[in-house]
Length: 188
Length: 188
Image 1 (cartoon, rainbow over the protein chains, first blue to last red):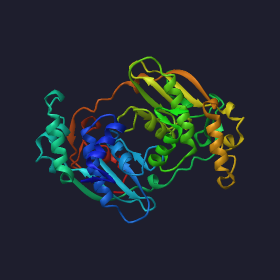
Image 2 (cartoon, chains in turn orange, red):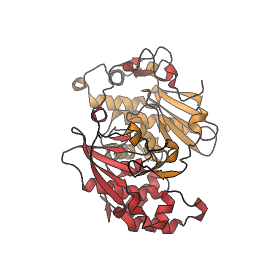
Image 3 (tube, one colour):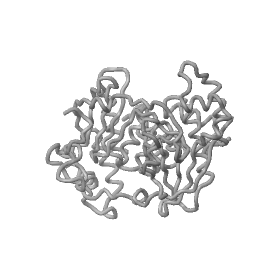
Image 4 (tube, rainbow over the protein chains, first blue to last red):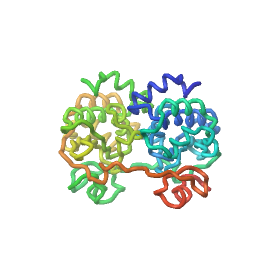
């Protein structure tokens, strides 16, 4: 069993070091990304879409060249456990998702995924074993095409100094930066 | 010179391997995150805010325990080159930003940051040397408090099966999943 260029154990080690703990979602995530990598559409370069912000983006960042900071991974907070790898220009991609129908054969995995048991009643070892055993058998694939507005690389354009905060910002955002336009994450 | 627990050269190696190339923004990012780490507010646990989606989130992910997938890093696309590390409960944090006033002493660095030269006229070696030499001297710090709505951990709540696509989704999103409500990133 390989995840990208890593053995299963190497991947688990990476997950603990990067993500901070062995989240079950990242083991499933390993199978999801590996399945997508094995079924890549034709083309030289691909980007990634992740349909949840929980756990799964880190599997993409560990197993593909796509990261948040290099812009090749885009996260859409749709709450679906799915990853798409798509050819950059055409948007043609392969979407891999956790198939809830197939999950029914794995009671601990199913109960965890649908939050049917309080955390203290979960058996983590059984859960991790079921996820590993189930592997790609609980996944399904779809061919998709990513919307053109997502595949187009947004150019940053000119940089200006915001007259309010004095920091650099993309001029396309307006006469002042977005933070000074009310989108600051801080209490003023 | 250290970035987190890494030497400068180890960090550069990590950047190339994770981010895919030695982006100048990730070298400045190393200094930004290191400065924030050295000036952490009191408290045991901290989360991160990154004010741009370009390059800088990867410096946070490489040098702190905060990643997109574990939810400890939040990216706000404000186009400002700044990172805040804040205490999880109180929201009290230290914000480190690139100070455009201080940048004026470094012509190649300044010209690159404000995109004053076409890429083909840039001297990458001089630029990287100036960024490394300038280091934390072009940064400034602020004490900030992150808005409570950002520090509060959003609970996912119950999971249901979407009657349209058949996939699992957070029930709080409504009677069907957000993708089926029109937010799908794919051409239908």
